Image (cartoon, rainbow, N blue to C red):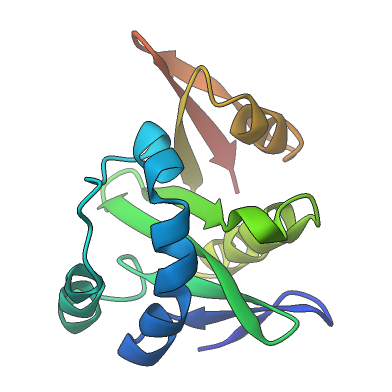
Length: 159
């Protein structure tokens, strides 16, 4: 399923073709990405290919963000809790595409998508030093900090 966010942004489920198209941007940002996410700096494209083969939508899904028909980032879902009807969401936009509201608009589109799937809340885990993500998440209505550990904030967005 393709989610149309606006006239410039579409979200397409990750497949091998769009993973490969996005990978050079991902690799260019990998050192920074490793600061915020549990990736290793030797991340390989075949890891994405394995994920594509094993994912179980709708609650285990990654969308590739397209901006003006070019892949530029991801929004993904993980750790679905069926009992509480909550799920974690992550996002990343390649550095050349930042400051265009792509992440904010894409995250909100996925929140709407999840609302239609009966999810009660969406969680974000963010390192305290990731000021840009904290600013973005604080702009989403009905979102607040529900937990704080050493260097991580957990936000919950009620749908």
